[in-house]
Length: 192
Image (cartoon, rainbow, N blue to C red; front, side):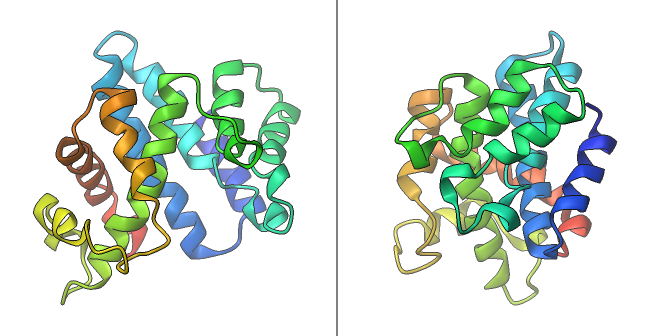
């Protein structure tokens, strides 16, 4: 599956602009994490797969929001129906819904998705309280300043993000920096 095919699938299944922007954010961060974690060897191919997983991870949300046990499984099935056979990619998408079954990620790609998904929401929340509402004015320090305030972006599971050190070997400030830079790189697509 190419990125263009993934994007067309996402747009055919998801109509909400903000949900699409969330998917774009996670895609950008997943690509950056693939490059960081997997090094230069085959990084373009890996970054593509990781990016597609990020792009499509929530793509079935509008169909499954009332049935969380089906979340991400439906998207993985749609991707299979289009002929995709890469099991790492398919399972990567599907892993996003595993927490509804009490299951945890298994691979580095899946842990990257698990950790960065929540962080993208926190970064957007920090941007939205900035005077200019722009990602360009967000810094790692401004995210960390909001971090201990649980009432700020209270839906964000900080413990999930904090797994970045244990599961990915990336300290929290570095994880925020990688994610923030990736999102700043597509700020026009995010409207921020």
